[in-house]
Length: 234
Image (cartoon, rainbow, N blue to C red):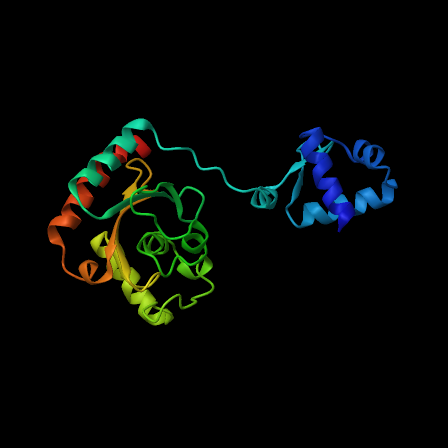
C-alpha cells in the first residue's frame, strides 16, 4: 500500500507523461514492482496510460482523494443573498452543489447554520440536501446512510422517495426539525439555464414550527432571489 501511494505521489510530482522507468528510478523500486503497481493503479482507475503508451497520468478516481475546492460566490451574488437577509428575520444561507454535495459558500453570520460535515454527510435530513437528492437519477448513490439525527428525521426510503418527488415537482424543499429538533429550513434550487444542471441552493432557516407553516410569501421571496442568482452562479 505504501509503495502504491508513493507511485501516485510521484505521478503528481512529475506530472502527466512520467514513465515507468522514471518512477522506478525516483522511488528506487525494482522495475517489475513498479510495473505491477502501475498496472494495479490503472486497473482501479487511479492512473491512466497516455494515448501514446509512453507515460502515465492521474485517473478519474484520483480526483476523489483531494478535497474539492468550491469558489467563493461573486460579489454580485453575495449582494443578492444579503438583500434577502434584509427582507426576513430568518437565517439565509447559500450552498453550492458543484462538488456533488452540500457545501455552504455564504452562510448567514448572524444565524449560524448546521455543521458543514453534517450537511454533507446526511443530505436526507436537510432541505438543501433534499434539493440535491431530488436532482439525482438515483438518490441512494448519495444518501447511503439514512441515519436519524433527531426523532423527526425521515429514515424510511419509501417516505423519502415520496418527499423528493414533491421537491422535484414544487421546486422547494422543506424540513422541520430533522437536523436540529428546534430548527427547520426551506430551500429552493438554482439551475444553470443552459444545461439545466443544479448548481446552488438558497435556504431560509428558522424555528421548526414556523417552517411547518405554508409561508407562501416567504417561498415566493426565496424563489425571486434564487432567480436573481441564476445569471450570477451559472
